[in-house]
Structure formats: structure tokens, C-alpha cells
Length: 254
Image (cartoon, rainbow, N blue to C red; front, side, top):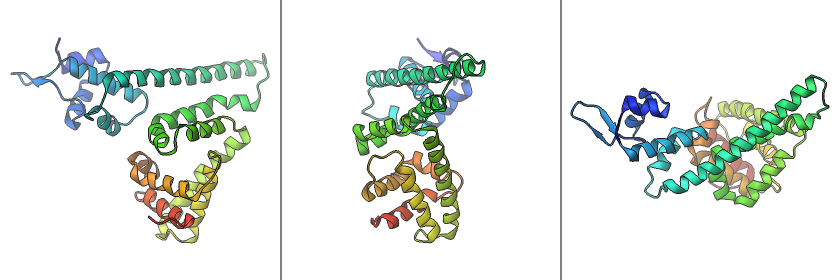
């Protein structure tokens, strides 16, 4: 069965404008253009749209989705199994949040006593899940499943005080980085303070700190556009500046 833009948009729950945009950026081309100039989509395009929407639901950006679904090695069946696993993880995380909301409501109504640690369980799980969805594949390939699993467990085991400290530290890293960037000197005092704050932040997640791993992570901030976008959001070039500062801090060469 074939669909026009309007019919496919209605069936998939997206706008016709979205489908036209997907065509423009090359992530979802129509099967053909009919004699009247209408885009026509077949089963293969419907299957790809389903994959795109799955990845979007998991928080993957369009640029990354395009790289995934247009790769010659892309395996649709395998991707569906991976989607299912991720959705189950997301459901589990939502269940934790719902459970915590229910407990907080009961606490406010005076029906139970809830510790501060319990209040933050759902938020810590969400932080872990969001990080896995955005960067899990890359960091697991680089550092291995065992290392990342330990890091996630360490995060989920944080006390409220530790959680507040690492959140504050993350903000301080960004603020100091922006101030250091204005100096233009990655070897300067502010830049090296940024690198040290970044090390302190990492130690909340890593079992063992090493200069080599620190430098490797800083390089990933430059190599992976998603990490770069995070650090460059307010000041383009910040990711490279942080990388340079960390390389100097750790004594590693670029």
C-alpha cells in the first residue's frame, strides 16, 4: 500500500511539514514522485519512519538518527530489539518516578514517612537513563560495559548531599570554563582550575581516576558532536578549549 504525505502524516501522528523536512535532509525520502508531483511512500519508507520515531522517542537527535538508519550496515530487526530494550528501561525509570511521586503525595498527606534519599531515587535514575540514551553507545565502546555499569551504580548510590554537591560542581565547571575561555589561555590559572574542577566532577562517577582516561574523555568532547554541542552551547569553541586545558593539566599531548 502507498501513502501520500498527508495520509502518512495522519497515520504516523506527525505533521506533513515534518515529513517534507525529513525528505529535505535526506533521512526519509519518498519512494517516488507521482505525475502530479506528490510524494509517495511505500512499505520501506513506513518502516524507516517507524525507526526514526523510535529513536526520537529515545532522545536521539536527527543528525545521529540519520547516520544510524542510512548506514549500509543498519539492521532493522536488530534495531527493533534494541528499541524494545530501551523502552523497557524507560518504562522502568518512569515506574520509579511514579512510585516516588506516589510516596511523596502520601508523605505530604501524612500517611507515610519518606527519607530524603528516597525522594531523589527517581531523579538519579533519570539522570543515568538520560546519559545512557544520549551517550551510552560511545562511552561503553570506549570504556567497556563493566566500567560504565559501575559508574551508574555509583551515581544511583549517592546520598542527597552528594547529589547536590555533584550538581553544583557540574554548574561550576561550565561557569569557570566560560570565564577561562575569555582569557584564551588553556594553560592559564582559570583554565587549569576548570580542568581540576572537571577532575573532581569525574571522581563522583569513576572508581579510579587516571590522567590518560581524563584526557581521553576530553578528546571525546571534541570528536563527538553531541558532547561538543553541550559544551559549545553558549560559547562555541569551549569543548576544544576544555580539551586543551585538560591535556595540559594531565600532561598529555594532543
